[in-house]
Image (cartoon, rainbow, N blue to C red):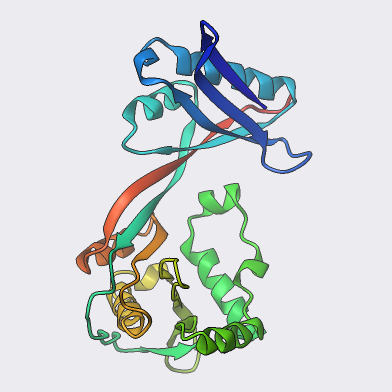
Length: 268
């Protein structure tokens, strides 16, 4: 569903509103836009108010949206309508992997390959549960299936190798000693023929500031062997400030940052 604003038969503003899933009471507003000559006239506010009222009529309980942080007028509008910030995600980019050597890990931990079994998948899920702020998990609960890795990875890597492409790699950082604990993870997915390289990493809160640079350097060193002319593009949550700082240390640039905002409507 959506709403449009017209002037003499011409659409000059629009907003789309949809359920997050069939039958869900959680809705999402997107594509809020007003033609440049018509901005500053309150059109966006009226479109948003119409969308919010529609969700109320449909017995919706909450509305989410995403907005670029640098779009100050839109952020101000949504805050004035009662939306609150949940989290922020930054989009990072590097034209090609920089030539770096892997930095050493601090004492007390080792880096090893993910075994692609249930135990390591469970450990990665537990790391995510500890790393992601509770208020974010409350809005988007973690699913163990998201962290499950198995025999599909070697199968995928076999075909990647036949095609001359880099293999997907998964590493875990584990403490040494009796009670071994996974305190960091790194996933690197080399790009295909026309896609960017991607990477993702997590660090246990107690180890932040000590693992980020070694992990990122390891990813860059590996990607140098996998079609080094490909750019690197991925997202990383802003709550992990040490991760943001480490990425910028290696030359990654933030292309944009999206704020995730939410409006609670309460029970109908």
